[in-house]
Image (cartoon, rainbow, N blue to C red; front, side, top):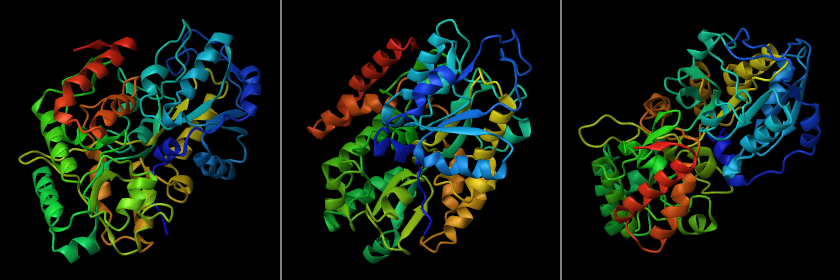
Length: 454
């Protein structure tokens, strides 16, 4: 059976992997920007180019198949693969290592994969007086025809001041996963709005106590519920500016709904990746709003809920009454090319291949491809497994619905939520009452990182 997973998110929950021992050697052996020209042909200073130079690729263990597929399809390009944690679980290892190389003036890898969507915010900016790590891609390094092939909005986290600094590997748009067998058994109709979703939760609490319609114990809870409500908690309006307004109607309605469903037990504050969740809710998940990768990560997974074939269905993301549906983006991954690379053409060839080629994105990639044509083929392959109770069209339709009012700043919204809100909610406090505290925490973290907060 095929599984929809997010390699980016899988990396986060798997825990940080130790950086390969080969990393130390790369500090001295990596590419150097010495002799870089003042203005290269792609719009940034370039090192002297060597078309035969080996490219060094940093990626997490889940991307091993990508490297293998590229090497098989491009035997003429020499690749040195280095395994690192992909900045999983907020380790920030990508940025930390590049800062070290900036100080030493050498060591940068040619290509880096990250599980995070906010790295372009720092990688596009000069560090310590040195040029930015990330090469801009839409100055000719990557063809515009390739860039245009990505799903609408998918490159937004990679775009700073009109320049594209990375290519998305996979997307993590939210949809409504549901157990069709249980829904039919209980005689419930699928909700078509968040208001109907809340009403169903109240009904389930009375008629089938112990069954749940969601979960709110993970750090990405705001990316599922608040982002979908157009809550302006994280509106990145410039390179170093953000608007934070958790007191809006859009924020309050999402918080109120969660408080209601949390109090009646249908949306518990428990992580979907904990033994507690498996013990309490295996066989009792009626539905759950969440990213595309939930299917393989928790449903079609023998180490998680292990839902039998023919039961799992998927529906479109829910709108609020009278509004169009939008969705949050819970993960995915990004590929960067170093502006210091001595073989930019080979690096670009690699990044284009692993994000667009069927050889990897359709045949081997675990997550929903960001490249539109690959995504269509990938979904058809998933459907051919016979696992799902419904077509996966809703997953495709949701991909371009990611709301642009929730940006990708340097700081982690998930870390703020996990530290500020989750413990308080677990102790019994209402999310509605915690909204001012959440706003203060976001604003403080943004200011620490040099943002002007409105």
